Length: 170
Picture (tube, rainbow, N blue to C red):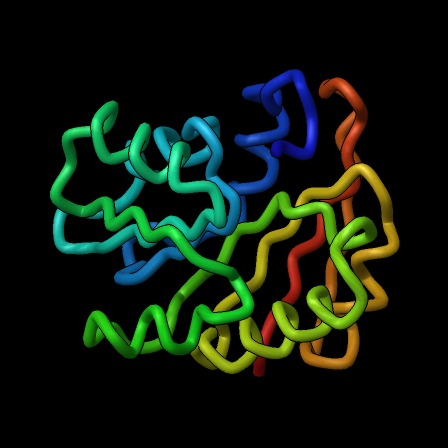
């Protein structure tokens, strides 16, 4: 149900979110929020007029976030990240400034990772970014065709250590 049985470290979270221009972020999307390990730090940094849409296939996680986090900026959705375009359109939201994902791309069913990468590229505004943390570097194969520039990092202070990608449009 989750990519790791141990939550991401605060060091990983801070490093992953470091490039975000919080002052100009209006729409942030998170795939696979689980119990909110990244959700809470995103909300701490997000401006008062911004929106955070979380998308998880597990309704238990969506329900948990809805109950555990009382914040009008949070919009928890049960669904697939591959449907992000429809999810945002149905809510009258424009393009995302940032999309964050810890989804295990290398273990998704065939075609799903490609669909998620393409849909994500379609919803991110020019100069926006797809922020991805993984335990396998294979995710680069999925995102590379859809983004103009990809920066890569690594965080040892996490169990397991994680590979980080910041994929930019435009």
